[in-house]
Image 1 (cartoon, one colour):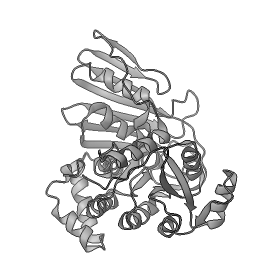
Image 2: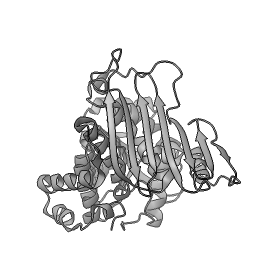
Image 3: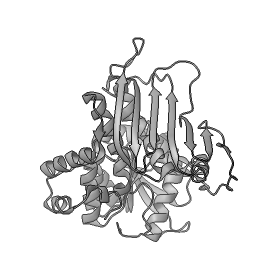
Image 4: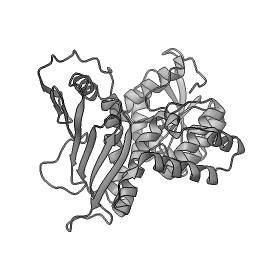
Length: 371
């Protein structure tokens, strides 16, 4: 996937508009304010009063705000959007921006489902603009160190994540049918792809809701993914598990031919193997600040970043496959999930140019590489 580059520097930073003034939008506001590589020209939100409140709270009372992101970007001379809207708004907001000549850095997930994510990948091809998903945990230096350890273990039999917390969010999450899988598990699924350098082949999931749960839907899930090369990736998690909670990153274990690597999610990973550990060469940044740096660097160089939408689609497909398996009780093939999403994308696409790109993809597995 090639995309238009935009030169920038600390003396001429990239001008951005943030779309979405809720809690995550304010986190991005602080991140942008701390970065010498970008400058904020405005905040867009359907609730303009909320956008003004966010600007005022950040000490920017004169910052431009508005209800419509593209119009605000044009008004303020912005060169890119940071999309922090709710998942259902990711597709319309990002599509409008791309066709307005604005690259987009978006919060996960890429869209509310895989078919919409495929539409966005096609829109990026039509427009030649970058759409990168902020899978912020990919920029954790400890995760990068774990990846280097795993590479020294030879063939990997099992990679596993345990994620146990007791979160009382209130609001929409507590009403979702599969809150853990849909709202949180994509972080671990994406990290598993990153750690193994392999893609999923099948998924089998059992989800359920303990009797004490304060969630309407299934707050617990166990998923087994068969990965390319035969490795099994196991995810075991809960949103309503009080006591001895894990890190937000989960607790990880990789078991290979030459030994084991473990990571508690908060401290440096540990290698227990008859091999020498490599010197960590992970990124010097992490979280959404890291995602922002990578986005700016990609626009400067034209080098496709980790999280570029084509590459990111498979992480969302893992979520969709797990949900389908939980509902069906069967093993779900990733290729079948992608094929169903592709057919849905073709049916629902309203733009002829985007539909032409969708129709021209010969292999959906190649979509992840933008081929």
